Length: 205
Image 1: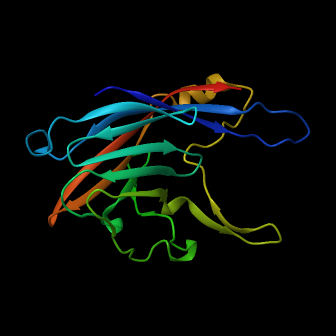
Image 2: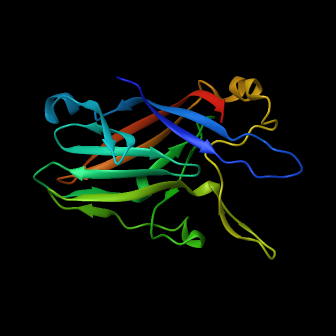
């Protein structure tokens, strides 16, 4: 499947010296569609879009098209229902698989941080309609006490220990993949998509 790229700029803070910003270049390296997608949903493809000067990419088949944007701590998406039926997103079955292959729950927009491990109702997308939402790994959400504390979202990809030594970070992260298991229910049938994102490069800005 054609590879597409996203750039994640990890902003660095100013301390006693200047550290350059770190840019993770993340590619959508593979999409696993339901087993019978070719016969039931038609040929699938990834297309490139230029929207308001920004480059986005989306996966598309005869039933859905879904655009992904990889942020610092979450995956933003926009899903359009191309089918003649309503589509459900069963959030309790959506999963994030980290670089070590560990699967975990996710939360999405509208869910309170302290309720991230509770059951989440499915989202319904009527035929011809669309939805915009986010996928946040629940295990990356944590609470910090103190004056400047509160709920925080951990980064999908950590800052290098030495931000002046990008080669060290490349050795750790380049080639690693994370995945989002993203099932959709159409006519009471659960169809599982797996979106794989690969770190292709790390650079300094």
